[in-house]
Image 1 (cartoon, each protein chain N blue to C red):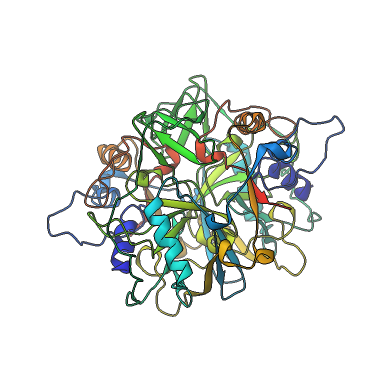
Image 2 (image 1 turned 30 degrees about the horizontal axis):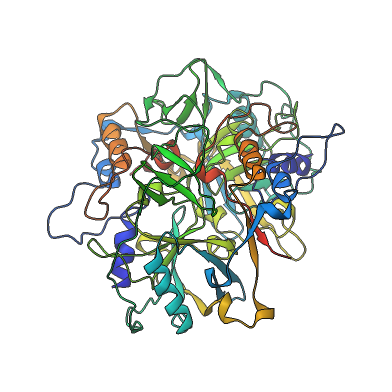
Length: 298
Length: 298
């Protein structure tokens, strides 16, 4: 019984979770099933130059999709750092529970490549109220929240738009203002969405595979989740853009386009979870409860 | 520089995080500082019978505050299971990233004590629109969200009220309806709040210390985060109510009362993060961004 009930509980889970068939009557499609049944035309390929692969010393890989449309200069620096192999032999050195994992040069002494500096436009927000597929119910942080056609979770006040700090989103660590960060120290969200950071720090992408290689690391015993005495940061072996790899070795990914009717169905299903497990659909969700489906392209 | 920027980023962190003093001008009090400076009268002691201590084989402890006012029968069963030492030699056997950690009897064969069964009132909701200290901005899942005077995050439609599935909240695994769960298999939220579970499953409390002992466990490679081949569930050595321990060995905790003016200030500060790190306050937050301060009672 307990395992069964666990499976039932799990029906409520992540889009990545498989859905066991337990009911005799055919249940409605789960959000994951809706996404996976979407036709090829509803999926968009992620560009090789927007895919960044961190390989950790334990063999795990953390793969990030970059968001150049939102933070073009930060993303340009990230690409430079990857192309210069700057992150090789750096480490993941801070894990703060229910907040962030952070990596880069813990020694603070590694020289940055030319053109990579803590300067330039902040890129915390973007001009305009970007068109989005909107959430049904209000957002607790902004007047508008939804998904852009190119697959990003965005909030807006109608004049400016910005990426939202959802689980697995990747941002640029920075010092107190006017610092905007050099893009060399990155963090990923590993807890409940810290949306108060929205508009206050640059987001440059999201982890699309391997977030658990960060979220399951030992929490730092030092202040703010920094690794303390006796704790060992996880070494980073390398960071490479997919575009820098031989064609046959590039991991390829695609996302479900928010502009597709399939995404609308997926969103509706996430906002209205159905029987057999759920009996009371919420009729809404917050934007970070609706991860944009991303999968390996086969 | 990177460490400094990390510290700065961390100012945005959890209430438990210390706040380094980096600025020459005296910054406004952080939410954590507001809570910690609150007078003794603003803090309420948690009853010994509401504190449940799980000790894991790795020496870590996971300490839970029970919520008998919300799920009296489930909590009664939890107390029975602890008093019968039923969880001794069970395990944490499922870790699904950005969702839940689950524990209990992975064999599904352990006999339940008399009076502990998958029956009785569901306790997913409570009658009445409970009075709450409300969030400033709308909730994405319910018409009302806020904190009860006894320290719990609650949503409501004005007729019924229910605990919200925030980070570290603890619930009762169940099978498909009409199952409500026996209270022997428990889970804790270790990711973005899965609020769609609200009103669909019983919450019985929250982890008040040691959530990272669950959230940092290796993710299960099996379906839905169950541990797969070659993975070892984390054994549970014991589970005891504080009230069952000798008086001198009982861990004691207190929470900041939502009825206090200090809590109102804490809530306001969480909804409006301030300089020097933040330059754009959100003007709101979702209820799961405002963990009720809980600390050891000294």
